[in-house]
Length: 123
Image (tube, rainbow, N blue to C red; front, side, top):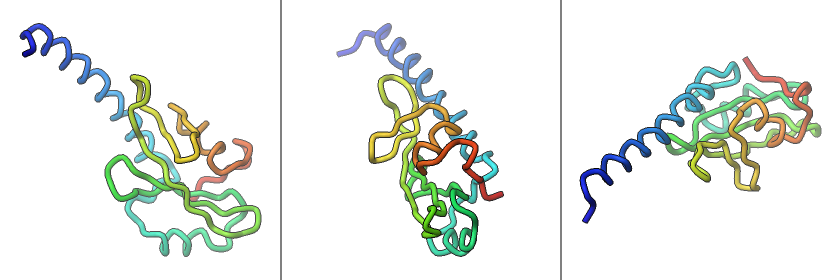
């Protein structure tokens, strides 16, 4: 059984960590490449014939799941899933290959394998 002061400490800690995700979600939702809940076919249609490393950000299946859809150098379109999750007491953007960052602008070039200056957000 928890003592009342332990519950208070835990809930303050939870509120602190869970409030940190909101600015990170805002960063995504306000990003110039954000396209919301479009499907894979629509994202391919609007990226088609775009220059290499043109990308868009879109919603995945749940609140904390997303995709970076982008044009590869070969002009193929790739869709890379990523999540916003709590890792080692901080919220981070993370994809399945182990790329983790708490900064979206640094995360995107790592995921699409290009220099930051070469990444072109689809606006």
